[in-house]
Length: 307
Image: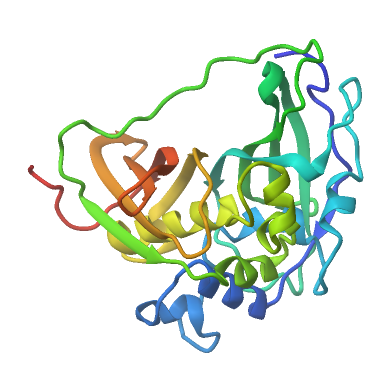
């Protein structure tokens, strides 16, 4: 597909992480003491939670806090308007897993290779920028591929293409979920999660969210996304990263710090290369859906619901 900005490749970015980074990440998304292989570095099966690479485009090699706005605006996309990164939210993300992520990058050289897949003008509402990001060893194996979109609020009407229709993955109607996972956030949950490297002020102080119409600070969309993945892996996949091949969801509504998240998942019984398709939604308890179009490819444990 062609269009403004399509195919633009960002400069290759070196990335690195320590064991303490993957421990923090696992704790911040809700991993429990029943999963010490994610939370204890001396556990004989110590592993990185598989979605950890989604944080690396924010973190790079840093161990210190960074200026989120400056980093986000560092590389403009040619042939499209210069967008304001102070008014951007996540659209959707899909992560495909090829190799287990080592608990530390020490001893290897890892890099991110990112390119633009599309820049879509949605009129008054804003602009969608879709990108692909690959985590790989320098000159070696690919570990993950992420396809995601950012929505630049109120920054449309520049004459660009509208973009293709999106594929929907609704949950089955009238069927009892095969798994339900709940997670109670606190007023400080976003402050913990941001220590992974995503230092967007939108999630730390009320002013940016007030300007964007959210009424104050909101949770990272990727917090909800990562914690939903944890919920699926814990309830359906035996907390084993080897049982997860692909994970995706659309960001449907903001989450406020202190909300309780409920993820409902349905096994479809449909398989692709031996991986079962699972569909899910995440909502605020008793309220709105915050993650829609949830879909994963998994090797599931236990029996499917018959209701």
